[in-house]
Image (tube, rainbow, N blue to C red; front, top):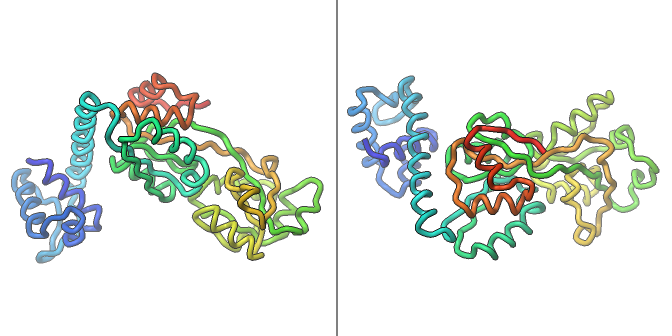
Amino acid sequence: MKLQQLRYLCEVVNQGLNLSEAAKSLHTSQPGISKQIQLLESELGVDIFVRHGKRIVKVTSPGQVILEIAKKMLKHAKDLQKVGQEFTNETSGSLTIATTHTQARYALPETIKRFTAHYPKVKLILRQGNPIQISELVASGEADIAIATEAMESFNELVVLPCYEWNRCIITPPKHPLLKIKTLTLKAVARYPIITYDFSFTGRSKINYAFEVNGLIPNIVLTALDADVIKTYVELGLGVGIVAKMAFDPQRDKHLRAMDASHLFEPSITRIGIGRNSYLRGYVIDFITMFAPHLDPIKIKIAIKEHLQPEF
């Protein structure tokens, strides 16, 4: 059994059982992948895939078990490499951060600026997606850490650490009727078409809950994956926007106005997700403490080792 065979196996599944795409992704040949997987099946004595001719159509029951073990073995192999790198060169390597657009655009820039100044030889990779997608990237070992507000708690493979608390604002075009209201209410907001985040993003569940408990049905006419898109359509007059407060910048968003809505919605907490039992290089822990200073290195290591989910 070879690690290469396990990589081929996992990539075929990642590519929807498409051998051609797996070969392209791994920069190898389709026949080479087929041969190595067949050798693995022969060694293990079971079929991992169900085939129709040369086409793979699904994963067998024993194949599912083998696939899960293969993922863990590849992750442990990657951790072994990290240990070696840690003791040979503590200031170079790579750090892959999976995060949402809002975090990448508004929350992370200052931390990334500090980190790159301190670790100029570390290659920093940002992979954006929705909270479920970025959680999967860390769970599979394709990213070192995830930063998001939603979804990570539902992944048993992750230890989740709290970073900071935030709330929302209502954005409108200038001279909008809402701006004349002395005390902003949900009932007033619900009179207008609303543009906000896609359900899987940035505390959207808290928005829905606030309207629901007040017996209101918001007229959500458009949802988007990031705040910049929401602001664009609010500026066009299609509705009022509900976005993270950090996403509004009076200097840049001169054609919009913002009203604090922290009294209307429960606050949300942005968290960092780390793979259980992961080996984190020193500079990864430094990045986490730069982003969330209350998370000291000892607390981080204990949480990963003991699978804790600490709160503020």
